[in-house]
Image (cartoon, rainbow, N blue to C red):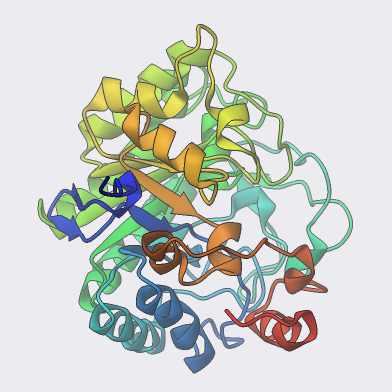
Amino acid sequence: MKDVQHPALLPETIGELSLANRLAVAPMTRVSAAADGTPTEEMADYYAAFARGGFALIVTEGTYTDTLHSQGYLNQPGMVSDDHEAGWREITGRVRAAGAASVLQLMHAGALSQGNRYRDDTVAPSAVPPRGEKMPEYGGHGPWATPRAMGQDDIDLAVQGFVASAVRAERAGFDGVEVHGANGYLIDQFLTDYTNTRDDRYGGSVSRRVRLAAEIVSAIRAEVGPRFCVGIRLSQGKVNDHTHRWAGGTRDAEIIFAALAEAGASYLHIASEGRDWVETATLDGGMTITGLARKVTGLPVLANGGMHDTDQAATVLADGHADVLALGRGALANPDFPRRLAQGLPTADFDHLMLQPMATLNNARLWRPAAGATA
């Protein structure tokens, strides 16, 4: 009997992007850019390795979008200068030469900024102190500062930063951009009821709280045109609140998804915030949040959370829960995961020590020989 090909190895289309398979590298913060935010040769090697390993789509780490309040971590890459653009152009060239598409994730940290070379203060929809504490793996310690509530001018500047960075991304050779609307950062802070206590057009009902996300997607789409890929990543959980769920459940999800599709999104990327997809995706009534996103919008959906489990990955695709699988820790442990899957080879388990004491590329490189890793 002829072996059946794993569904993740079948081709897929996202807008104008034709992908050789349905496996993507999820965005993962690596704090390994130069101090001024310029991507490095080490970063180029890192991303090219995923492309050589067979991943069809690579979504970069979150990249800051202005010289005001968007930067979240020291040594985070930016896309706000000619040097940044040139550094990313080297990376996109190498990724494309290895046969993969690349998407730049655009990020504004908002209240969850723990390292910004341009500013010491933070901004957010409301002056609400974030839950939890800063993350030592990314250079932080202690409680978060209470942010300043953004005025309309602050919001306008943030939107302009996303748009300008998207234009630079297109010039640098990216196949698209992904707006970071997940994991507790600025856009997610606007979406979340307890971090957004505004009473203007951006606060109150979920249809108002999603307004900033929709305005950013719409503004980028208006600038880059219909063919450039413009995705958005969403999550219920956050880096500082893993168990959070949207207050309105399925109804909130439907409103959010519909607004972003109407704004011109090419795809929706639903993140699990370090947890298994089954745990985070299942809604009341049994439908999954990724399946709901597909049903409401008709757009391609990326699912994230334990997709290195090949049985779960097959189920997610075969049962119509998502169109593309985004691997984070599974990709870190196996940069050649698609090739291993195609050849029936075993995969390595993720070792959290590779991100210690900080989640830098250099620490991961030092971990490999000590762990006897060959990937």
